[in-house]
Image (cartoon, rainbow, N blue to C red):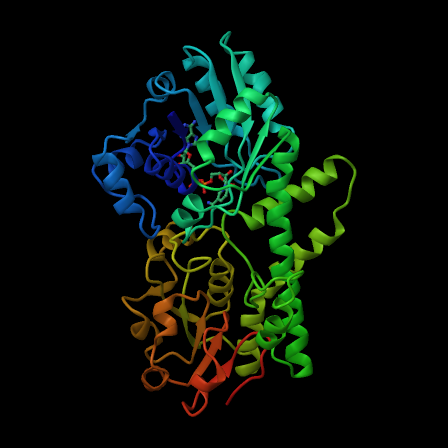
Length: 434
Ligand code: NAD
């Protein structure tokens, strides 16, 4: 099939490449000429394992192209997929201005029937509103499809080529059938439904996963007080098929460009129809507080006096295998430390640049590697579970720190690894070791 994808970010780029990989002709469009220029030079503007190689093979095979010229791309395609950002507004609602703009530009470029598909996460009712917007700018026929995206950064290619399910929200059967054909090579689990339900499935799924994370984090906080071990509690719970083991990892809470924004948006969506989503409000509140556990532990260790200490921070991205730092807990934790007179030394394998672009370059010491960050620090906080941190020799690490204090915000290390190293070790929902 001939497909145009509008928006070449984490979702648009990965989806475009994967549609090409299964044999479609794909044009990826972005209004950012810098991104397109990079892609046309064989460079990749985001970090996602395996993406660079897949782009190269599909460009070579002539199935994948990049352009800033939206009109030309739309004219060459039967299916147009919108994957632009829907970032949160200050009140928590989704900002739909990019998607509206994209829809108008598509409408103006149309030269015949198209299937116009929305992959961006949008509140219930948005597709219907967009269809009216498009109709007001063109006389050409089209069908609307809602195609919510579930990929996870860090494993985006795997998630796209082997998705758990594909959700297709459609008004008319013909367009739905075409979209089913497109996704059949990827999975048998295709749910075809109405557009509003498809839009809701995305928010409900993310809200449920966020709930699981906040739930286990609260259990972890109780475990710390009653002397239980949350990793064992989660393991014991996870074998129950009704519960499942995924998303039961205690830590410093979720971040990223999706869970924080989608939970806030769903609270707003409910509020707009006079429904107070009390459970989800608590999930958000618990998550917001969880990151400060790291600070509270530091305060306990240093008798409330952080001013003048040197703290090493390992990990800046909201999770490993991505350079995405949007809503990363590290942003607030580091800001709090800096505001309280702490000398912060930090290192992340890939997210230093993206972190600096949000946080600024001032006030923090940026290090070349993990050991340099730890050198002469009074304590080390591990905020992202990058594999390279898990591999570190704790005996070697102990030697470079001024004081052997490790706050493991992601429960990367276990008792066996820590005992005998001399570390004073704090983790999440597990007994302290010293
Ligand atoms: P992103 O910010 O990485 O990328 C969006 C891209 O769209 C940018 O490159 C921007 O320049 C481009 N753009 C904006 N308006 C445009 C226009 N009119 N024409 C052409 N290009 C335009 O965003 P993302 O992380 O890929 O997310 C996209 C959508 O997918 C969001 O709604 C998000 O909630 C949803 N989503 C994201 C993820 C994820 O893990 N990132 C997962 C599932 C769903």
